[in-house]
Image (tube, rainbow over all chains, first blue to last red; front, side, top):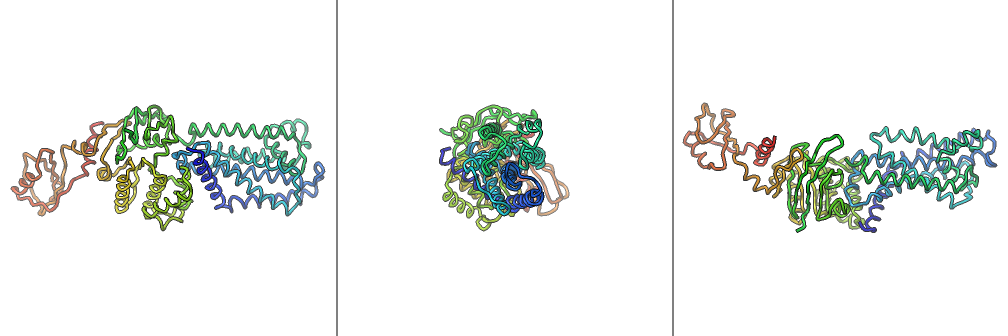
Length: 257
Length: 305
């Protein structure tokens, strides 16, 4: 397939994916906005006002970057896992599999769809946060790159989950039992400096900690970890997941008999 | 000469050990309307799945218009249009979007895809339903939608896996006309169906697959000429109390006013009527007991068992 044709196929998948989640925006875009508003009201305003400053920032200012990134993570993941599993379940993934579209274009198309939803929801949550606090982005480049890489990483992770899923239960197990705990323990609501040394070391195993802190660095200029290390870890995970996804697609795990 | 499809020593053993294909060989020439028949579980869908890369083969080679699927799968796939047995589109998507998107997966520019979609929707009588979600279509419309989707990239080889299953006779016949027309225009067609009348009407060549082996691969004419005995049903004008024995024909009295008679290829139907006339048996109508291909198909499968 020529490059031009591959681009058309890629564009087709991306548009199809965006239309899919926009058609059901009440289920996909609205809930994160409401949930995050509640976080801002309860943790930011009501409880947050009773908490001391963190690294020189009010508690509300401190948690805003983490909450935005949490929305990006969960929505990128959810979009790809539900869309690809749905395509498998209804067998319309076969539309792509019988076509000359290369596997990497199929993967990139689904990932781009996940990134689009993650970024749209992230933007909505950011707008909501402006009702509660002022945001002045300190490092625009870092902010943009880390949010994009995070969305890519979790879209790829969602793809892996969808390939292995055999029922609708299987697409909610990982988000419930792995993703949510890792996100909550990934420094969204606190700095790891508050933890005892042992738990600080344990926290460093959590990849989400690196993303949240890098994003927080981009927005308010503070971080618990080294930014270069964080970027290396994120890019490393993306490379690993991309390789895994391609291997799954090429061998046909879960999609070919 | 380039064949539309060349299959050599194709085998498939599933993970549970089931041997679906045991080394089949098959050639479909360009322009053929080819029937691939067989009972349930014979290996038809597995063969189609392998050609379209939905099933991984165990061994053997498959070439589509000389493109080996192991060497240039993408090129091979670009020749194929598939109408699968099961509905496999996104039921929440509008009809026209399903077809336009399929064109996109083949790298076809959107404006061209829109034009082709419009033409196909008119041809297949789906134009009024173009904005409807696919789930709101009737069974027959869904079948036609899958045909439109398979044709949007103008494939050289169209594979139809039971395309008229569950479709009423009127729509089935209009689909036959449509398929005959696109075959006449040069598209090679491979058809699997359980309606043997359909295969007999449409196809010039036929292969019968059973237990993962090809047991017949010939022209429809040749195959039908193998049918030595045909069974006819005779409806009688008047009820018959006792049937006179015949030394030439094997009769069975089904009802008082209905007989069945077996006529071999060497026998003459005119002579049969003479015999009936001599015995004062008046016939009001006559028909084949089953479709000729069906009769032959059943005998071949019985022989294999």
